[in-house]
Length: 186
Length: 110
Image 1 (cartoon, rainbow over the protein chains, first blue to last red):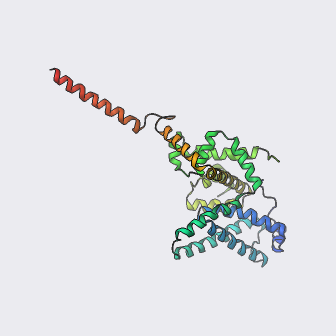
Image 2: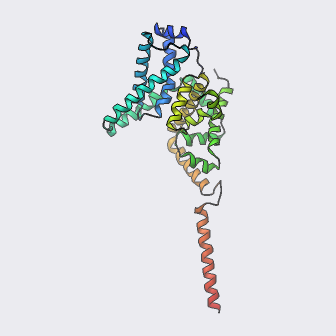
Image 3: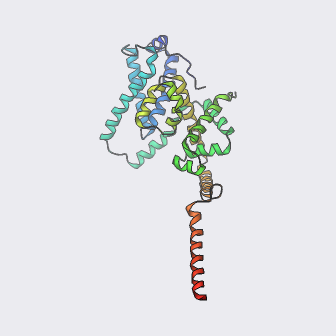
């Protein structure tokens, strides 16, 4: 789970350029997750996030097929990130020129949010994450809920618990370590 | 950002908790798009956050009320420190009032 199955070497890029479906699927899934995480904190709607991801992939695949870019095999990730940054800045410019959304449109986009978030992990991976979360002590689960669902102010959480920020980081780190240590149940 | 810097500063956790400046976020992204290990840290942390959110949406009305009231109880002294302004103010007011009453009573006795 969550492992990179292919090295980003010359063979990978050649197969990507040739339109190999397995490699294309891996490429869009692996980087689709990373792009989604990167963009969700910067763009106001799930539809916009998806739009930027699609545009980034279109440009990347066009470049790879024309063999104009990714001369350094180790630089695939850097190339993906750089193209995404370009698309993101273009989106910012367009967004700053358009008027704000009406309420109905905003609500529709909010409803799309869950669909876009499914990029983050497969059903199997999500089930495994849920099983690990269920093993956490109640208190830790509650704090994660304050952090990520209720999105409470972190200083307020620290005050309530009498801890500092490093404890919150440690909590997230610990949950992740537990995930790695726990075998996947078939 | 190097991998050692990312690990030492718990960059993945700070990134997911929104504790980085915009510049630092771009620097860390440039790193984790290239580093499979840090990318895995970020993806796993994001998956945990996502599941917590999804679970929260499922059980929002009942649990939010319960956790907010629990937090209020703790912040007002139920489980944490009792030395909060909200707790101390009535005690202070009572003490001042008692002094005033005692002083006035003392004046009356003379």
